[in-house]
Image (tube, rainbow, N blue to C red):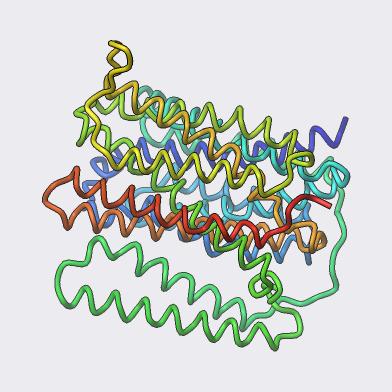
Length: 452
């Protein structure tokens, strides 16, 4: 029974992360107004968390392998809970941004640490256990906007951070009591590697997040220099890791063909997942003149369908293998994106008129089905090739997925700002993502066909 309680604790950690991200997005306009902050500065309340999560994910995966799952998961809960506390009492926007960075570090460590815990507790049903994690995030995406919106309206925006504290403390206590220390590797942290990696990824992500705010030639030059510096530091990091005695990221996880294929696919998949979640409300309001409330509700069918389908796909993952659900799921997402690129006022079928709202609901349902099929398989693919590095693999995979989302959102924002016609801008964005994701389908065949 205890291992199922442990699984529940790991799931709570992921649920906290998902709820926090979506509830903060709902509270963002109120936060901006309450601090009388500029939109550019307040935007860091959202982007700093994603930046911190992207940087921490692979580092947390390595920490989980070296220091043990229990220590890493509890440390992640401490960071997330402490960050939530400082967010709740933040006296100004600068303090809130710093606290969100701490919270994002904890949230970024949840996935690799929790994955390591699950693999230790369910060694013979790893595929299903990890696959069921895919249903946690859509649950949070359903709860977060609705619960966060109600709490902000009833108790103010600080309440969404206060909510995390008792839940985080409870999860810490249960994890400290029930979790086994787990196996540890005799290795050292590579200080130079950590510095190069953190600096490089941070420079790239900051450059990407500031692209949309670059207006003058000086801004563009600064952003370009920052991006170039980040690329140079990552190149130095890769060269250093190939020679390091105890590398942060095993070169095999980056270079070998199956892992490289999985990382590329997850980068493209993350680009589509995060873009859809971020852009659909704006798309519904600007193209179909929906209300703000209805534009948020449009995402609910995607989350519900993704949750249900991912649960089924996780259960049958051993029988279906990796490639089939990834291919079918990717095709469904590609078709959904292609349809979103067409401004359809409605659809007539045998005299029955389906208006734009129900068309979007249908498209979001299909999108959720595609994600529910593809994500559990994408989460598991290649892990059996290096089962002792499962946490590291998960951390690197999460980094690529998060990076894909950040880059796609920045590019989409640039396209939408650069076109005078919003409908044409969305057509370019959605068709572009559809084509890019379709190109990655042959890459799936470079990954293992099925679990061993």
